[in-house]
Image (cartoon, rainbow over all chains, first blue to last red; front, side):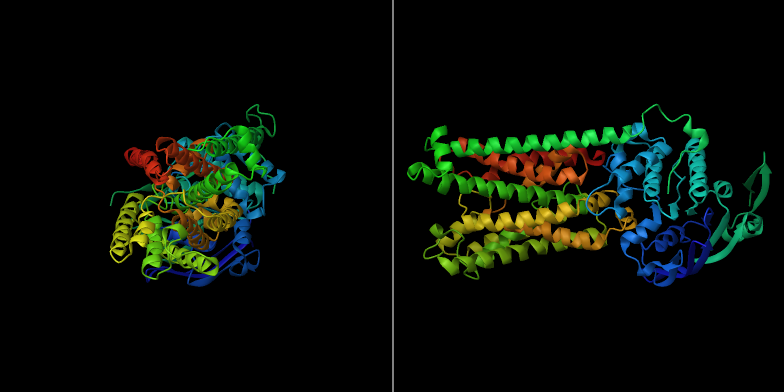
Length: 252
Length: 373
């Protein structure tokens, strides 16, 4: 067990967004967080690493309560990739180098540069490393943000809709990279995602949020048409195409 | 954790030798550091030119001799009592405003922001005028106020004028901060709030003049357009120490400032205390602008110009951007003052007039360019 989340409650302007959300996650596993728009998926991710302060709830990372950790300690445990960013003027190298911030005191070390170089190569971003981030395409930007999170050397990746801005080719690359990194580095990842087919490809387990509460936590078998109808309000049929699981929406 | 390329990727990684990405990056950082050294050299040249320029002709030998204290005569007085304070004042004021503008732009993520365009400088000017006229603190400049300025009273004046200038600056800074945090206004709207604040404070400053004596008016009017020509060493020293401390604070926070550039949530995710950084950063930046304004009046647009030029020169990395904006601010203000002295021989043209001529077109350009920034 690497991550254990229990009883998360969060209110926004007095309106409850999350009500008693909890789950547990092992190393090398990917949890897909599903739910309709506004169900609280993004909020849940931000509550896990205290970008937002939940009203109640406990997050244990490797058995330690993160409420007792300093900001930089939490940042060494969790790599967060936001859903969207404004025009970031930093160069790609600088942007990824920022991922080392939780580790530095005064200046970057050789080791920090080595890690950044390795991550840039892994993500095939070498040729872009000196370009300002705000001149890149959506897909390239998304890769840089993921690279920064990897440079943090976290135990847990928190990815907020990492594939929503990507074309099919970039989606497949991101899919492959995320799966590979999680298995290879024995991390765990929590990914909010609204494309059910991508979720099926990526996730080992699935957390379905409805009205700020956990509707179901399940593995692939438990993701039935009945559950999907209940959460999303659409009729679907589950099938398999060329060995891949598929969700097909039916006319109402 | 070691991040290894997947097997099927390892073969197709470009033919860059290991470490080459870092090498290219560090080479660029090094080049930009050399650029900073070049700017420092340029600053030095302008300082020497400034020292040598003026109604009283000085040869290079005269200049060198008086600089190193070998000339007790008229040359020594010209260099040390007339020109040097002016140059030192321009140097520290330019540094302070360049830094202040950069930090405000970065913390608010607003390219149009600066102490001048947000009404922070005007707030400080009002505070200083209020201290002088209403609280009777007297002018900062002994020659402009009868019976002012000896020993402990001079220090008292300095303190009350700066304290109220800071209070005025903080009013503007707080309103701007509240609006940008809680109302989430667009950058352009924030500037409109700055316009409202500055016209409020400018009107207040004019109103105060109706209750002022002749001498006090003289020292209040001088705030409308910033001027570095009548500085005294205690002021310069105060400003220099404060600017050094504030610069050190932001140099210590340079990585945090970079994280802010990556967005508030990312910064939080990287362990940056965003709220504290924004509050203390805005306070420090306002303090720098308030001190400059208390001593030298409203120097328009310099805090807007310096960071924009610096971003063009060294990019968005605050490790380089902080020293660069300080240097560019100092160079611009010194150069503007030198130019003003060449245009008006008596040296009485306030430097704020010239920085307005430089800054207003840039401001309009930034507005026209709009979304592309």
